[in-house]
Image (tube, rainbow, N blue to C red):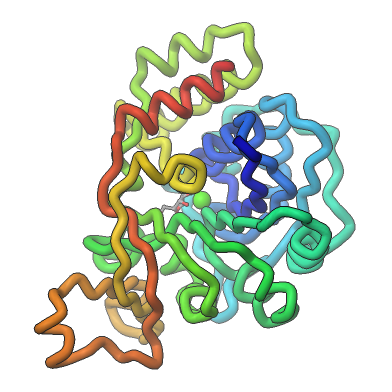
Length: 314
Ligand code: BDR
Ligand code: CA
């Protein structure tokens, strides 16, 4: 099987760490680079955290670029209550010696897509600010994106607010730009996001492993359990990568989706039109603002968890 070429966009973040670890270690993924964005924490902390994850993965020299420092409109709203002050549960993990790429996130995206001989899949697991800026800055290169498989949105309830999922809520204008871009989009949203999990027993075993990747992931999962007072905890963002390389483990459906950018209580909601054809034709969703999006609705939880464990413990 040929490798899938991927660029990740992250706001590392505990579950981003689970995802980056997986992408850097899975033999079928060619991780071309990583762009960092303001989201769970500030972008400099995101870069520092991402480097620590790459160290734990034993990854080679994967370029990591600094991106947007705030959403397109409005202020940053960090998720310290979920990920801790440093975004990775304040475990005091030693800093990395890696250095940030001199290019900005949008420049790195441009260069990696232009130079790739294989189709490139973008996997944003963070607010979509970098991706929206890239689409506007380099529209010709953007046409070469194979597809975007993102963690964000929900076809049901929200988490940041009753209506909105954090990544879309943090920068709804950016999300609207990305959804309406015409690039094929798959959405790994809250309908599936919480279901693949790791429990205390598994995390404890991993934390005692001699293998740096297992040790790192296990300790982080245990730190996360303390932080959010839950056991088990979700592998979160990682699932978007499973959707890229193992779509047969998922049930997905195409829907019309609109991102709510209004100032009201639904700001940042992804309105997913799940009505049947007959009702839809009576009162269609605003076609100018809507996008056809492939939405993940169900998954083989056991297989998705096993895939992560096998890769990170390998
Ligand atoms: C998303 O928000 C962030 O806190 C997580 O890293 C994930 O990307 C879930 O809503
Ligand atoms: Ca994230």
